[in-house]
Length: 58
Image (cartoon, rainbow, N blue to C red; front, side, top):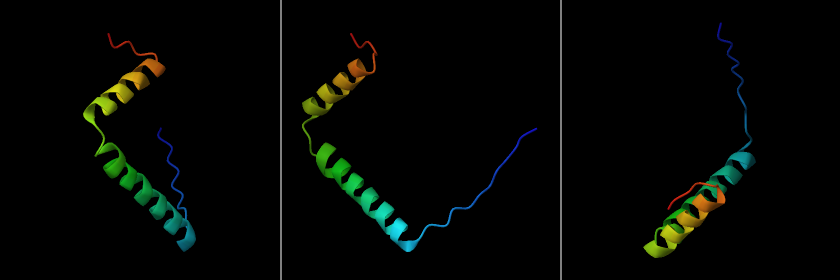
């Protein structure tokens, strides 16, 4: 038998504004930080992250 629990969370305007501003900052970083980076830099970063998580890549 599936048990579901539906609870609504009511956020204040201040909480929603903070969440929206943080989302905007993260999105801007992704577009301007990673979007304009050299592809070799992105490749090296992804390579290092794979090694950090223990995934072999060679």
